[in-house]
Length: 314
Image 1 (tube, one colour):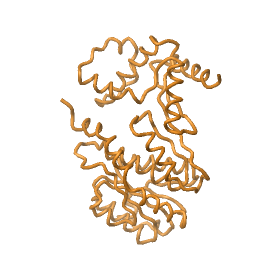
Image 2 (cartoon, rainbow, N blue to C red):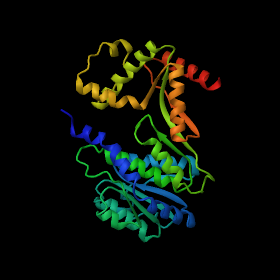
Image 3 (cartoon, rainbow, N blue to C red):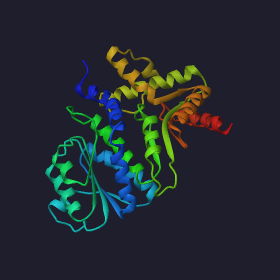
Image 4 (cartoon, rainbow, N blue to C red):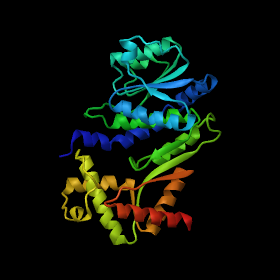
């Protein structure tokens, strides 16, 4: 039987689609305000998986603006009353429930001090949504599994949409989620407002293994399949060897998981890899491609890099 966590994770693409179809005017209006009153710094306030989504947003901002983004320990405000909310900052909270008292109190403190406060929140009727200047829905519907899945992914997308309003570059991690990346990238270009960058610039990060033959590529893909299956079941193990992977016999459920994971990998001969990479670059209108290679051996990884260099230097 399928687990609740797996079911909700598989529904994430539909939640992302729903989010991208909504709230464009709110994001653009927030972007206009940030350009009229540029923040001197940015803080993120979140916990658990939402804090990881906030780290992704922070990476987008720091990599292009040169401004530090701080993940704020809420106790600095709620217990120690530290005088750090007296600056012109952008305070961004990410939350599924929007009901954590210390999160709400922290955002209220920043708002009272004159900061621009934003909540990327799943429950728009929550106290957190009322505590901030700008409440932007995640559109992930109710989250029933532990740990969070679809609300985490929607938090990543919402952070990217917000980052686009700051006029910075954007990279979509196709190797993590192969769904709706082209739509997210188009949304980034459509909603981009000149700021730290004069024009939009987006990249796509791909998982790629290039091999000399189709047979070798199939062997390397089998090892990746088993590694991804381990990850789906929470097994933290290195990429298995090819012999181990080839000896596996998968049931229907395991095969369904493997089939669902394969679209986020590009594994094949130089010609096959080049065709798919060029097609994705066109779909994403990408200015840059970032390549991640995790193979069953160092030799296979090094050879993949050599073959890729031959493709793009030809």
